[in-house]
Length: 409
Image (tube, rainbow, N blue to C red):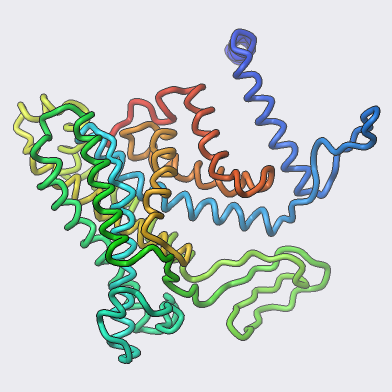
């Protein structure tokens, strides 16, 4: 009876709220359409006056679909990594930080600048530091790839470290000059201040590095996995610059490069580290207590100022690393990209439940996958809009987000 009652309750809910029923129908239609596309099947109906009209299906090669899934996961990991800092700021300090996107930009520029200087001065030794710091050299000339040799590897690792540490320095300076003096005021005052901070940082980056987009790296070795064909397996082959694992005659393949693996390892490791920190360390427990009730945390002797500083340090470092890993993955960046990327980060944080770190992680993956998989159904120009539409739909069904009630914990 319990199962029957459950189905009856859901059915009554769909009758009482037709919008939910419409969402279920659209979801089932998209799933069925995707299955038909992967199978290469068209569903055609004869419409009077219009002739044969395709209503579902088409062709979506399996290799193309899996590539979109991989890109969506990688994009989602970066969004989730950046979203952790934004969620922590909201849960501990109580305001939405609109400067967060420009902190991402700071991390990206600092990391790439460091990589350029290390690779250019130590390796090529033909460029002056000023030229390298302003990134007036093509990354391909410096051989900046994670598999480009010990020097290139060291340059990228140092870039990651400086991206995190440098962003922390900027974040702490901003907190001291802009946020700390008005910390006891309303969250609206802090939000408006963060907008001003964002504009200052954005145009300072513009003034130093200009408006051009930069090529930041080369992906290095690429691994290509064939997934469909008709001939027997040929084994492992070495091409001019590509490793190909050929299961069958190559008619479709998935490509991943060394920077994809680097992003995956860094993002997953940092997310696990944040989880362990919050659940086991004394400072992590203090952060969770302060997120639940700031006044009670202060009364019980928790050093709230220290917790706030650590929140900025942890959030800033993750944000800076997210900015640099975005550069490693995408290969290009510009002075305005952090602000544009912030829109996806906000969508992920709101979708997961604002103030929830785990919600930011899950929301990032959902937004990333929605952004890339939507290209199967709609033109790529509308992919970002589809991600925001998904966020709105989820909030209509569950207004508090997926992880409602779970803040920093």
